[in-house]
Every structure is written in C-alpha cells, then in structure tokens.
Image (cartoon, rainbow, N blue to C red; front, side):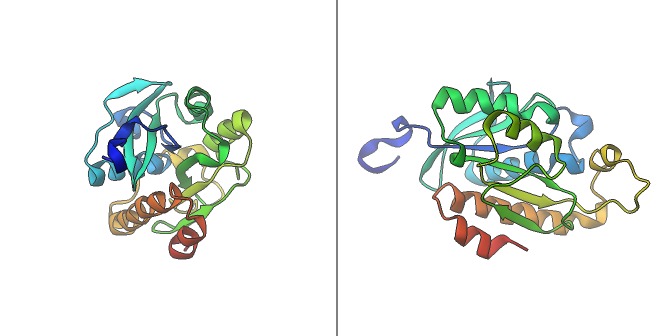
Length: 198
C-alpha cells in the first residue's frame, strides 16, 4: 500500500516492457533477454503474468513505489510496437515513461547499457516501437554477444540459445537490469547509467 492507502488506485505511471518471442521454442534464445529480465523482476517482486491484454501478458504492479504496467508482448518480436502502443494509448503514458528492456548483439553477455533514447540499431522489436511512438523512450539493453563471424545470419544468431557456460554472466546482467528498472521508474536515469552501463 502507498501513502494514505492509495495503493494501486493511483494512476499507472510507467510501462515496463520486456521484449521477446512467445512460445517455449524461443524461451532460452538471445532474443528473449527482455522477457528473462521482466521474469526475474516478477520473481523478485512476487508477481506473475496472468492476464492477456493489449496483445501482451501483463501485470499491474507497484515497483519501487511506482505503479507500473509490466508487459511481455505476445505479438512476436517484429510487432512489439503494436502491444506497447495500445497500452500507452489506453493509459495515456508519455513516451519517456515507456521503459523497454531488450537484447543487444553489440554487447558481450553480462554487459548492460542504459539509454535515454536512440535509434533502433538494427533491432526489429525497437524498430517496431519507434514506428509507433518515436525514439524518445528509455531502454535497458542486455548484452547477448556478437556473431562469431560475418557468415552467421543475424536472425539465426538472435534465435540461437545462450551457451550453457554463459549462465553466470547472463544472470548478472539480468540482476543489474532489474535494479536499473527500479531506478528508471523513479526517474533516476543518470544514477542507473552510472551504476549499470558496462
């Protein structure tokens, strides 16, 4: 409960969207790092994604004192923007309060990077979001490693599983992402960048 018993009755202030592809065959792929981060957030905060709305699995939760709609779009990665746009419109959430967590192939596994805004950098999920709300939204990028060579098709790379021997590094990056989310929903982006940009 919040002060004076407002609890969840206050307005939803933030969307926290982890990106990925639905379905068990994609569960441990690099492209699902965003899903993994919000799943860890759910585990730590003691909630579950039980409701399907806005083409997404959602949870209406208070994170670090701020009421958030936590989302896992179920549209497949390339249409992530559809789900986020619907929810942002419905709750009248400004773009700068739409926080997106996703995989980044330019960062090594175990690294995280927080950005205030920016281009898609070749990421189709981000491209989809930018096409509907523009570039002015904060994001947490989770390193999933670079392609081992130029011959690898990017789609095959991001849909490949994380290697078993990288579990520790991935876990550390997911933990850092969860801590960053708590700072970001409180507007502490500089603090989050100082702590978790690696």
